[in-house]
Length: 613
Ligand code: G6P
Image (cartoon, rainbow, N blue to C red; front, side, top):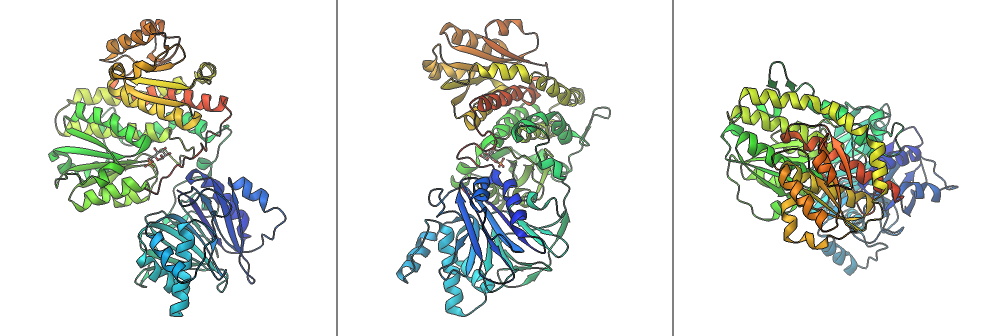
């Protein structure tokens, strides 16, 4: 959570930083601020509750000159969203300015120490406490800011990326990281810093990913990387494989809609070069590198959060069916604290769009220490989860900006399906014939996804009939049960309508009490082994006057006749049906959110990358 940006070089820093902050608003958007430094004179700090656009408005007429700046967009943890709690914060002397992404867990203890020494604070944040602490160390030890930072960070527990400006060192940004992401862009006589590479993409593609417990001293012509023990490290400069167009709206009203519409391409990209229908082969180098362990494994544990957790649930059905291996799907946040039983040789699959979700990251760190093999299924290349995994398969969905995950989910499903088919083949639980059949089905998915998108206008009309509903129920069975959960999650996130997802049969054990003539019940009822049973459940809802909305297979007149509204999708093998059946639900949530006039790309209280636990 929270986005950080920095710039030092020959350009005017403020516009670079503000543009970068807008790209990072997916990480939080309840307040924003900048600190600007010229060649001389004190650092100027401007901050404002609200989005980056509110900050821009509030600084009109202010002095924004200067070649060095740091900026922050916040997702509140300590203290309500307000001007006062917005970053950057100033040190007690006013000479330092700092921004922070993460949580200082022992901030209360540090604060008490500082209060007993007579310090008074101007915000409720852990960030201000850390900054005062750094300055106090510098004052007592008569040392450089960089040395004081190292000492302070050794006392800190929690996660952080901090960027610091110092009145006495114009042009220098000092940065440090543990647990939250930090990328440095290397330009000609200039450097950029960001929570991800998007703020620097239009200026440079040379980047350095900073690791935990590293510190960077960044000047226009210099980048010094050190560990907290003051040893100099050689920065590893990588070339970014990302185009600017990938992070812009490209004519769509919202990133979410653009990303939903990109799915035929992104599903294709996640499969491209990895499967060959003619030779009936799958090439996933991440899997190859731990083939023996995968074949021998007794179980697979999938850890993830949010939408990625739903992808994990779909994967549970697919792996168990095709590879006949026991799969457990865990919320990363529960798994990490539960003292789970892990046997050496267990395979853990971590699924994450961002690759930075704190709970998922810590869960796999713990499992790795206990001897598990970690496979990452991650979208963001070079992210923390990707780097700590033993091996992995990138999902290749491209940057996902809309806070509600859409194309990342289908890319995860595509990659997980390939992995399950390959493992089933290796473990000889599926035949070459079945493998071929599934690859042929996967090959057709992008085209079928396109045909669902061509119905977007009618889904929009359908959405307008339900925008005033107070609650929704989503039901599905088998492979489509996690799709029902995902459909309900999308609606909650985007429209703020209460929605619950349930296994269709389980609805008789409680949720059916909610059914009346006002309640839309969305059935994911595509043709599969369970369909007859799901249709019986539809009848049960209809008999109680519930408003049945259904996602069905093309030409299914029976299911259609039981629904007051339905969306048809092309037929496909049930194992990979979720890749298609989720798309109408994404569109339904999107159009209901838009009809209600909500900011679907930045829903209230949410953040895309949850880097606090
Ligand atoms: C947040 C996002 C969700 C995402 C979840 C897990 O809640 O809003 O869209 O599914 O985090 O994130 P990850 O990046 O690990 O997939």
